[in-house]
Length: 421
Image (cartoon, rainbow, N blue to C red; front, side, top):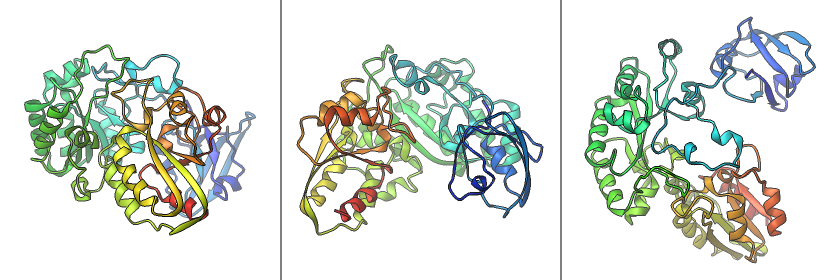
């Protein structure tokens, strides 16, 4: 792995320097870089020397004067330039381990890298955090991180992560507290393991770390038809109990799915604070509804349109409320179609796991002018589904026109599209 350029931002310094996709940044000010953390740090200057290996193999050295905070405009192929730190665990609830063959290669990579947690918000277990990592975190004042805690009971954590070294979680979190390193905590709730009394223990331990813990997200274990481990799914009773326990603690939120399973209303916006764990499904429905409430809608559109929202079962309640308001617009009819996951099984209800064939089965026989899908169905910066097939493949199979909403927590792009009709 290396600091290889993926693309260049138009009208940027990098474009002026004729840096191209495929080039490699060897060093900045004679310093080799491990990752984007080093890169960002070295770019905080008004004069720099960049060593570039062009894609034809030639080496160029460029001296550059710029504003201190000015970005070069380089997008790298990866945020980590050396090897990604691998996951050492074999969690009983691991989603990667239960995936079948035939999906995109990147979906089988198990990383547990503190750098990706800091740069991209991925979750880490801290089981491979070394002393030199801690020294760097402390020296560079890195944070916040996103930590998969699951439980603070050492024996139970070793059992759930199937790693004899996993029991030091609380010790590491106390080190975070001592060195003022903030973090967000995640708990994947597995009934019969870390729920009930064990959940009380974990939340109590985290509460003692005070403001070092920015938020705690509790999410239900995901169970597909490919899972070999015998883990119970979260049912209505478990969801109700978990919501009740979580309500005793500050900055602790249950994911939307708990409220749906419990048959309860999605909480108001204040419950979620700063919505800091949206990507974990914590507050995404409420955020979407609040965002839509403030959008400007046309009273009419120029020609009749029938539009389908193809979505996950988890998002149906929110989109049905949005659809009802959109249907007040003259000449517009919208319907919400949940996509049943035949591929993963009926227990999977999130849009990020919808495959191309599941989408095709859902929309093929629907008469409409447009199908709206969230970008989370596709790999980032691409039109690839989980199963490796593309949106173009779906277009050809269905004969439908598709609109991809890039921000799954906002309908602004779609309503802007309506204003142009």
